[in-house]
Image (cartoon, rainbow, N blue to C red):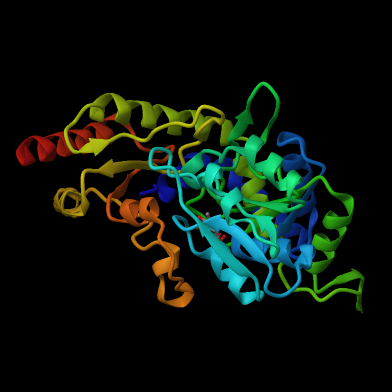
Length: 369
Ligand SMILES: Cc1ncc(COP(=O)(O)O)c(C=O)c1O
């Protein structure tokens, strides 16, 4: 799905010296590259504090640790998403309250959120899925009205920008706390695990920074219950080297998405991804909506037979997962799990490879008519 070897080959002359420098300095834990990366991200995304941590899941856990919500507090979050957020809530003794998503954009349906708010609700946790942002203006208004925290999961949407006449901001910077992941296949990925938190709140920032380092502010003085969740310096150096290319990655991903649109628009049985009106799309995924599950599965198989990878993000809605089971009805999420199919998209995908993918999808849909 993502050509990490091709990307490394193209960027090796930037990445190798950055890694060598960390090896020479031997500042492996909380070294200079971590601080430089935090500062560069804060400037780029116009946010006061960026705190590196070990991965995107830890970032979510640290966010909820820093908020210190009472046990059993309800947090409203989408059921059509990756598992990390729900997993963290349950591990922390909080209750995920699942909301359905929009059938066109696949994003949390903010219009359904208010009806789920109870006396126990303490936070809303939107996920900026596939690379575009949940409608933050109405979401923030609701949060303000009901005195709720907003924790944004921006693991798939770093660099996406929300813009309406009244509000603007980057993914992860518009709530009380935002999180992201530097997992290798993310738009801004490292060579292992890594993550970061964003906040404009000084007190939350201080808690997060301390909690990510065993709750210390002074060495061997533990004022808070924390974790060992530091972003290591080698990974920070890799992310920092790639950050200079992120604008180029985004342009390339948008060009790939545009070519898919041109090649696939109007084909019978597949819908190309719908864009939101109020945020940019950084195309972490390019996800088709197929007519039904039988057709989706057959298309996936037909592509695989031609050596073309595709992925189902996500095959099971969170409320149907054995570990997180809840008896609720979320028809759009349930339906989408049987119909979505994500195609290869990355900054390395060339036109010839993409033509091959488009041609095979066209052939498949023509044969199925
Ligand atoms: C939406 C979302 N949230 C959280 C995560 C967790 O990130 P990590 O793998 O760095 O823990 C991911 C990773 O795939 C993700 O896609």
